[in-house]
Length: 333
Image 1 (tube, rainbow, N blue to C red):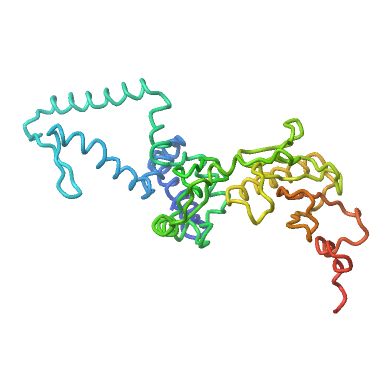
Image 2 (cartoon, rainbow, N blue to C red; image 1 turned 180 degrees about the horizontal axis):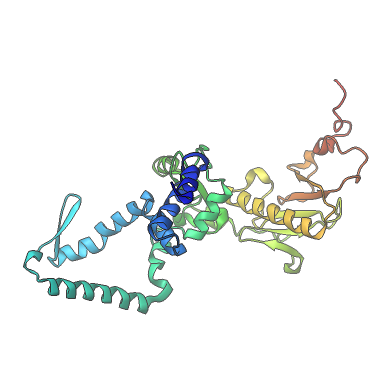
């Protein structure tokens, strides 16, 4: 038994922990190709196992080339099978090779004429999310369904538009979510909410609101639905505010894409503060909702307050300190 065989068997049988087919497929390609393979070849092998992609192209076959070729009398469909209407047994080897060459040349000529736009119909016409964005959304959700929580190794995941394109939804990451195929199917079949006007609501502004009139040079970071600024009256050095662009009173009135957008900015703000202020050792994240909770500007904003060891004598209890005397809960009531 070779050392290589023993090492790989030990990994495959005892060490490998997988949540999808990626690792064994990659090893399969490398073994079949003599130990070296292009990334694109590995990706193509993984794609061959992705049933959601195969389902997509099955629909394409029926809707597009199958229908057109059938209308010309070149093919005919019988259930789940297509067949040529000519008897290819009559073709010589040379004739078949020449026809294959013509097909290949037609494909390459079209690809050259269209360039990168060749697959644009898939991204815009049929609602398919590009691979890189799809991966980022699934990674953000820790490869779990954001509705039922099932993991990718138990059920295939889709990337879904929260607000559909037909209702003004965008392909921005904050309008996308990870759903298992079952939750996505149930959502599509059972969601009868009237979403008309949601897209337009994102443009709502109030001329008298300081956050609606925020100057661009004050913005630390931003995305399509929210922005990040430094607090004018900081509690600690580096205090930031994440604010939705839409004029909306409080957090509970936000659309889910806006919550996603704010969460992305809080993550970004945490990284920015960590890089700029190495002494930051923790954070308080807070929202004031309503006058009785201390809200003074009635445009939702989320506080990201960096904390440092020693900035207060006793930090225990953190945000419980919003009510005097309730922060320290070390004593028995």
